Length: 190
Image 1 (cartoon, one colour):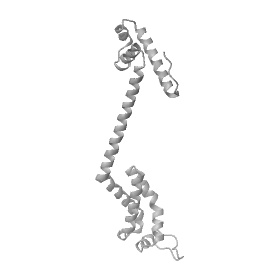
Image 2 (cartoon, helix red, strand yellow):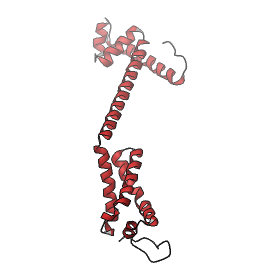
Image 3 (cartoon, rainbow, N blue to C red):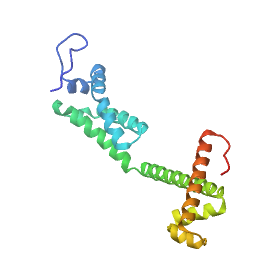
Image 4 (cartoon, rainbow, N blue to C red):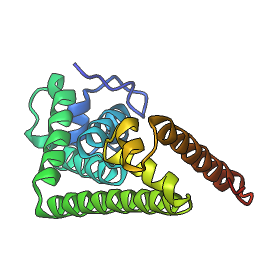
């Protein structure tokens, strides 16, 4: 049974639920302090947003104070508070507002991911464009198209060694460009 510490006027302990039903402010504060962290944690985990969790916590305690007359067994207080919190979270998850918000968030994340992929593709294209034509072609044929060094050498009328050396020079130049971008120094021509 939930027992409230000594009554504010120094009298005997009085049960929390009875005091809540009478509107006792000390009992209300005790219940809030005892269960607020649990309610917020449940809401934060279920809703995935601290602002929504704060709103659900507030609404939970409004319901606890307004509907305490429905609680018959003081031993069930913690479970009852938890159930109210879960119900508030579920109501939010089912609401059209939440669904629109989640859809908008998902769309924004997808747009950001597309933007990041486009930025990477642009960076790769810019880096490849900075290479000499033969090195660029060898890198493209080898890394993207999947040609072997022997096949690339044949395409250029050369040996597999030609392809390997062009690939190595191209990679070296790309590493230099990457290093130059990180340090802000002008690139070296290679």
